Amino acid sequence: MSTIFMRAKMQVQEIKRYAANDVIKAVAVAAKSYPADGSDEDNTYARFSPGGTLELTIANPVLLGKIEPGQKFYLDFTPAAD
Image (cartoon, rainbow, N blue to C red):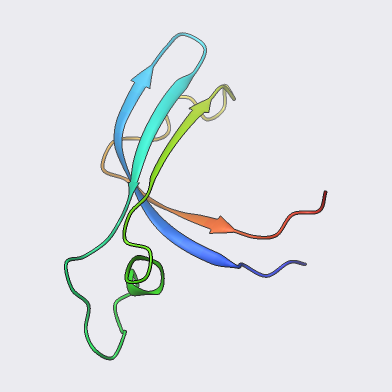
């Protein structure tokens, strides 16, 4: 099993719903400052890489309509086999 290389927390900002798919736009969650002891969960990603955007088209019928604006999700970067 592969280990997570990096984890980012993303917040959905916008969703466009179509007959056959949803297009979601999300941005990285980041704070203006973090506690010195690093105890903020978002600190593990955002303190060092404080920006990011994601746009996904979801066409799986089981997932359509399941994601809503304002929800937060983890985006895990795990090495994949070729």
